[in-house]
Amino acid sequence: MSKFNLCAFADEADSKLDGQIAALKANGIGYLEIRGVDGKNISAITADEAKTIKSRLDDAGIAVWSIGSPTGKIDIKKPFDKHLDEFCHMIELAHILGASHYRLFSFYGTDGAASYEDAVLERLNRFVEKSKGSGVVLCHENEKDIYGDVAERCLAIHQKIPEIKAIFDPSNFIQCKVDVPAAWNMLKEYVEYIHVKDAKANGGVVPAGHGVGNLSAIIKEFGSRGGGTLSLEPHLHFFKGFGKLQALVLRRGKEFVYNTQREAFDAASDALKVIINEIED
Image 1 (cartoon, rainbow, N blue to C red):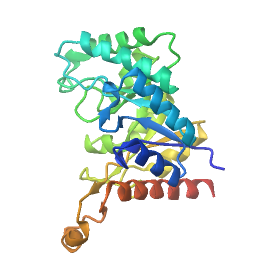
Image 2: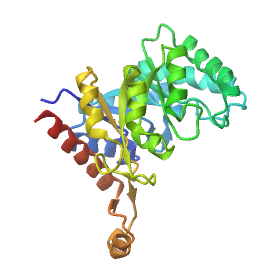
Image 3: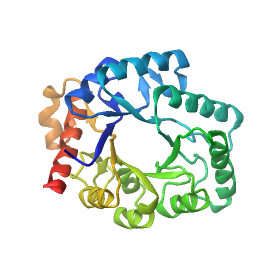
Image 4: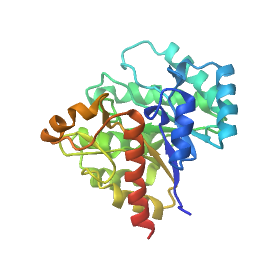
Protein backbone atom coordinates (compact mmCIF):
# COMPACT_ATOMS: atom_id res chain seq x y z
CA MET A 1 0.00 0.00 0.00
CA SER A 2 1.31 3.48 -0.89
CA LYS A 3 2.37 5.79 1.91
CA PHE A 4 0.77 8.68 0.03
CA ASN A 5 -2.83 9.79 0.42
CA LEU A 6 -4.24 10.62 -3.01
CA CYS A 7 -6.57 13.59 -3.24
CA ALA A 8 -8.00 15.51 -6.19
CA PHE A 9 -9.98 18.47 -7.44
CA ALA A 10 -12.60 16.15 -8.87
CA ASP A 11 -14.58 19.02 -10.38
CA GLU A 12 -12.00 18.81 -13.16
CA ALA A 13 -13.40 15.36 -13.98
CA ASP A 14 -17.07 16.35 -13.80
CA SER A 15 -19.08 19.32 -12.59
CA LYS A 16 -21.66 17.01 -11.01
CA LEU A 17 -20.99 15.31 -7.68
CA ASP A 18 -22.04 11.90 -9.01
CA GLY A 19 -19.45 12.18 -11.78
CA GLN A 20 -16.81 13.35 -9.31
CA ILE A 21 -17.45 10.36 -7.07
CA ALA A 22 -17.27 8.01 -10.05
CA ALA A 23 -13.95 9.50 -11.20
CA LEU A 24 -12.41 9.33 -7.73
CA LYS A 25 -13.49 5.74 -7.19
CA ALA A 26 -12.37 4.59 -10.64
CA ASN A 27 -8.92 6.08 -10.04
CA GLY A 28 -8.56 4.80 -6.48
CA ILE A 29 -8.48 8.30 -5.00
CA GLY A 30 -9.95 8.48 -1.51
CA TYR A 31 -9.82 12.21 -0.77
CA LEU A 32 -11.48 15.25 -2.33
CA GLU A 33 -10.26 18.83 -2.41
CA ILE A 34 -13.71 20.31 -2.80
CA ARG A 35 -14.03 23.39 -5.02
CA GLY A 36 -17.09 23.08 -7.24
CA VAL A 37 -20.15 20.87 -6.85
CA ASP A 38 -23.09 20.69 -9.23
CA GLY A 39 -22.11 23.98 -10.82
CA LYS A 40 -21.68 25.89 -7.55
CA ASN A 41 -18.41 27.10 -6.07
CA ILE A 42 -17.78 25.92 -2.52
CA SER A 43 -18.22 29.52 -1.32
CA ALA A 44 -21.85 29.49 -2.52
CA ILE A 45 -22.81 26.15 -0.98
CA THR A 46 -25.17 26.32 2.00
CA ALA A 47 -24.78 24.44 5.26
CA ASP A 48 -27.73 22.20 4.36
CA GLU A 49 -26.25 21.44 0.94
CA ALA A 50 -22.93 20.62 2.60
CA LYS A 51 -24.66 18.11 4.87
CA THR A 52 -26.18 16.39 1.84
CA ILE A 53 -22.80 16.36 0.07
CA LYS A 54 -21.15 14.88 3.15
CA SER A 55 -23.73 12.10 3.31
CA ARG A 56 -23.24 11.22 -0.35
CA LEU A 57 -19.45 11.21 -0.01
CA ASP A 58 -19.65 9.07 3.14
CA ASP A 59 -21.79 6.54 1.28
CA ALA A 60 -19.09 6.39 -1.42
CA GLY A 61 -16.24 6.03 1.06
CA ILE A 62 -14.68 9.37 0.10
CA ALA A 63 -13.44 11.96 2.60
CA VAL A 64 -12.96 15.70 2.10
CA TRP A 65 -9.32 16.63 2.68
CA SER A 66 -9.45 20.36 1.99
CA ILE A 67 -11.76 23.23 1.17
CA GLY A 68 -10.49 24.43 -2.21
CA SER A 69 -11.66 27.95 -1.51
CA PRO A 70 -11.27 31.21 -3.45
CA THR A 71 -10.25 32.97 -0.22
CA GLY A 72 -7.63 35.62 -0.93
CA LYS A 73 -8.39 35.65 -4.65
CA ILE A 74 -9.49 39.28 -4.62
CA ASP A 75 -7.67 42.54 -5.21
CA ILE A 76 -5.88 43.74 -2.08
CA LYS A 77 -7.55 47.14 -2.51
CA LYS A 78 -11.09 45.72 -2.50
CA PRO A 79 -13.31 45.94 0.63
CA PHE A 80 -12.51 43.04 2.93
CA ASP A 81 -15.36 42.55 5.43
CA LYS A 82 -17.66 40.62 3.07
CA HIS A 83 -14.75 38.44 1.99
CA LEU A 84 -13.97 37.70 5.63
CA ASP A 85 -17.60 36.72 6.23
CA GLU A 86 -17.38 34.35 3.26
CA PHE A 87 -14.26 32.82 4.78
CA CYS A 88 -16.08 32.23 8.10
CA HIS A 89 -18.91 30.54 6.20
CA MET A 90 -16.48 28.17 4.51
CA ILE A 91 -14.80 27.34 7.84
CA GLU A 92 -18.28 26.27 8.96
CA LEU A 93 -18.55 24.15 5.82
CA ALA A 94 -15.17 22.59 6.63
CA HIS A 95 -16.62 21.38 9.94
CA ILE A 96 -19.72 19.96 8.25
CA LEU A 97 -17.72 18.24 5.50
CA GLY A 98 -15.00 16.97 7.83
CA ALA A 99 -12.23 18.88 6.02
CA SER A 100 -9.03 19.23 8.02
CA HIS A 101 -7.39 21.71 5.63
CA TYR A 102 -8.30 24.94 3.87
CA ARG A 103 -6.66 26.31 0.68
CA LEU A 104 -6.26 30.10 0.43
CA PHE A 105 -4.33 32.79 -1.47
CA SER A 106 -2.53 36.08 -0.78
CA PHE A 107 -4.39 38.61 -2.93
CA TYR A 108 -4.18 40.08 -6.39
CA GLY A 109 -3.24 43.64 -7.21
CA THR A 110 0.05 43.77 -5.34
CA ASP A 111 2.38 43.42 -8.34
CA GLY A 112 4.83 41.82 -5.94
CA ALA A 113 5.57 45.20 -4.36
CA ALA A 114 7.09 45.11 -0.88
CA SER A 115 4.85 48.05 0.05
CA TYR A 116 1.86 45.67 0.07
CA GLU A 117 3.39 43.17 2.50
CA ASP A 118 1.87 44.71 5.63
CA ALA A 119 -1.62 44.77 4.09
CA VAL A 120 -1.31 41.17 2.90
CA LEU A 121 -0.06 39.93 6.28
CA GLU A 122 -2.75 41.89 8.14
CA ARG A 123 -5.51 40.22 6.14
CA LEU A 124 -3.97 36.77 6.37
CA ASN A 125 -3.68 37.23 10.12
CA ARG A 126 -7.38 38.03 10.27
CA PHE A 127 -8.11 34.68 8.61
CA VAL A 128 -5.93 33.01 11.24
CA GLU A 129 -7.74 34.81 14.07
CA LYS A 130 -11.17 33.86 12.73
CA SER A 131 -10.17 30.20 12.35
CA LYS A 132 -8.64 29.80 15.81
CA GLY A 133 -10.01 26.79 17.65
CA SER A 134 -11.52 25.34 14.46
CA GLY A 135 -8.92 22.61 14.06
CA VAL A 136 -8.68 23.50 10.36
CA VAL A 137 -5.18 24.02 8.96
CA LEU A 138 -4.92 27.08 6.70
CA CYS A 139 -2.67 26.47 3.68
CA HIS A 140 -1.38 29.06 1.20
CA GLU A 141 -1.08 28.18 -2.50
CA ASN A 142 1.54 29.90 -4.66
CA GLU A 143 -0.93 31.06 -7.31
CA LYS A 144 0.25 33.13 -10.27
CA ASP A 145 -0.13 36.93 -9.92
CA ILE A 146 -0.89 36.98 -6.18
CA TYR A 147 1.50 38.42 -3.61
CA GLY A 148 2.92 34.98 -2.75
CA ASP A 149 3.60 33.84 -6.30
CA VAL A 150 7.37 33.56 -5.88
CA ALA A 151 9.26 31.54 -3.31
CA GLU A 152 10.76 34.47 -1.40
CA ARG A 153 7.38 36.05 -0.68
CA CYS A 154 5.87 32.66 0.18
CA LEU A 155 8.70 32.18 2.66
CA ALA A 156 8.00 35.58 4.23
CA ILE A 157 4.35 34.62 4.72
CA HIS A 158 5.20 31.32 6.41
CA GLN A 159 7.94 32.78 8.58
CA LYS A 160 5.80 35.68 9.77
CA ILE A 161 2.54 33.70 10.09
CA PRO A 162 3.65 30.16 11.00
CA GLU A 163 0.04 29.08 11.49
CA ILE A 164 -0.35 29.18 7.70
CA LYS A 165 1.25 26.18 6.01
CA ALA A 166 2.30 25.85 2.38
CA ILE A 167 0.73 24.12 -0.58
CA PHE A 168 3.52 23.55 -3.09
CA ASP A 169 2.39 23.89 -6.72
CA PRO A 170 5.29 23.30 -9.15
CA SER A 171 3.33 24.35 -12.24
CA ASN A 172 2.43 27.74 -10.79
CA PHE A 173 6.08 28.40 -9.98
CA ILE A 174 7.10 27.44 -13.51
CA GLN A 175 4.56 29.90 -14.92
CA CYS A 176 6.08 32.60 -12.70
CA LYS A 177 9.60 31.80 -13.99
CA VAL A 178 10.64 30.46 -10.58
CA ASP A 179 13.26 27.72 -10.32
CA VAL A 180 11.24 24.86 -8.85
CA PRO A 181 14.03 22.91 -7.06
CA ALA A 182 15.26 26.15 -5.48
CA ALA A 183 11.70 27.01 -4.39
CA TRP A 184 11.28 23.52 -2.92
CA ASN A 185 14.51 23.82 -0.93
CA MET A 186 13.38 27.19 0.38
CA LEU A 187 9.86 26.12 1.37
CA LYS A 188 9.94 22.37 2.05
CA GLU A 189 9.84 22.62 5.84
CA TYR A 190 6.57 24.53 5.58
CA VAL A 191 4.86 22.31 2.97
CA GLU A 192 1.68 20.62 4.21
CA TYR A 193 0.73 19.05 0.89
CA ILE A 194 1.50 19.21 -2.81
CA HIS A 195 -0.69 20.21 -5.72
CA VAL A 196 0.27 17.75 -8.43
CA LYS A 197 0.46 19.86 -11.56
CA ASP A 198 3.41 20.02 -13.97
CA ALA A 199 4.29 22.35 -16.84
CA LYS A 200 6.69 22.82 -19.70
CA ALA A 201 9.23 25.64 -19.53
CA ASN A 202 6.85 27.78 -21.61
CA GLY A 203 4.15 27.40 -18.93
CA GLY A 204 1.97 24.88 -20.76
CA VAL A 205 0.41 22.48 -18.26
CA VAL A 206 1.14 18.77 -18.78
CA PRO A 207 0.67 15.56 -16.75
CA ALA A 208 3.00 15.03 -13.80
CA GLY A 209 6.49 14.01 -14.85
CA HIS A 210 6.20 15.39 -18.39
CA GLY A 211 7.28 18.94 -17.55
CA VAL A 212 10.16 20.68 -15.81
CA GLY A 213 8.62 20.64 -12.33
CA ASN A 214 11.00 17.99 -10.96
CA LEU A 215 7.94 16.30 -9.48
CA SER A 216 9.45 12.86 -9.01
CA ALA A 217 12.32 14.14 -6.87
CA ILE A 218 10.09 16.54 -4.94
CA ILE A 219 7.44 13.93 -4.19
CA LYS A 220 10.15 11.48 -3.12
CA GLU A 221 11.67 13.96 -0.70
CA PHE A 222 8.23 15.06 0.50
CA GLY A 223 7.51 11.44 1.42
CA SER A 224 10.87 11.00 3.11
CA ARG A 225 10.13 14.05 5.26
CA GLY A 226 6.86 12.50 6.43
CA GLY A 227 4.60 14.23 3.93
CA GLY A 228 1.57 12.24 2.96
CA THR A 229 -1.02 14.00 0.81
CA LEU A 230 -0.78 14.64 -2.93
CA SER A 231 -3.68 16.59 -4.38
CA LEU A 232 -4.21 16.19 -8.11
CA GLU A 233 -5.11 19.41 -9.94
CA PRO A 234 -4.80 18.42 -13.61
CA HIS A 235 -5.59 21.67 -15.50
CA LEU A 236 -5.12 19.70 -18.72
CA HIS A 237 -6.67 20.77 -22.02
CA PHE A 238 -9.66 19.06 -23.50
CA PHE A 239 -11.71 19.81 -26.60
CA LYS A 240 -15.07 18.40 -27.59
CA GLY A 241 -14.79 16.67 -30.91
CA PHE A 242 -11.06 16.18 -30.43
CA GLY A 243 -11.08 13.24 -32.83
CA LYS A 244 -11.73 15.58 -35.76
CA LEU A 245 -8.97 17.93 -34.61
CA GLN A 246 -6.42 15.33 -33.60
CA ALA A 247 -4.16 15.61 -36.65
CA LEU A 248 -4.07 19.41 -36.39
CA VAL A 249 -3.39 19.34 -32.66
CA LEU A 250 -0.56 16.84 -33.00
CA ARG A 251 1.04 18.82 -35.82
CA ARG A 252 1.15 21.79 -33.47
CA GLY A 253 3.00 19.71 -30.90
CA LYS A 254 0.28 19.63 -28.24
CA GLU A 255 0.57 16.02 -27.23
CA PHE A 256 -1.51 16.31 -24.05
CA VAL A 257 -4.95 17.25 -25.29
CA TYR A 258 -8.03 15.20 -24.44
CA ASN A 259 -11.53 14.64 -25.71
CA THR A 260 -13.31 15.02 -22.35
CA GLN A 261 -12.72 16.34 -18.86
CA ARG A 262 -12.85 12.81 -17.50
CA GLU A 263 -10.26 11.61 -20.00
CA ALA A 264 -7.92 14.44 -18.97
CA PHE A 265 -8.49 13.68 -15.28
CA ASP A 266 -7.77 9.97 -15.76
CA ALA A 267 -4.57 10.76 -17.68
CA ALA A 268 -3.39 13.05 -14.89
CA SER A 269 -4.12 10.37 -12.30
CA ASP A 270 -2.25 7.72 -14.30
CA ALA A 271 0.80 9.99 -14.64
CA LEU A 272 0.93 10.58 -10.89
CA LYS A 273 0.70 6.86 -10.20
CA VAL A 274 3.65 6.22 -12.53
CA ILE A 275 5.75 8.55 -10.39
CA ILE A 276 4.57 6.99 -7.14
CA ASN A 277 5.26 3.47 -8.42
CA GLU A 278 8.78 4.45 -9.48
CA ILE A 279 9.45 6.03 -6.09
CA GLU A 280 8.08 3.09 -4.10
CA ASP A 281 9.52 0.21 -6.16
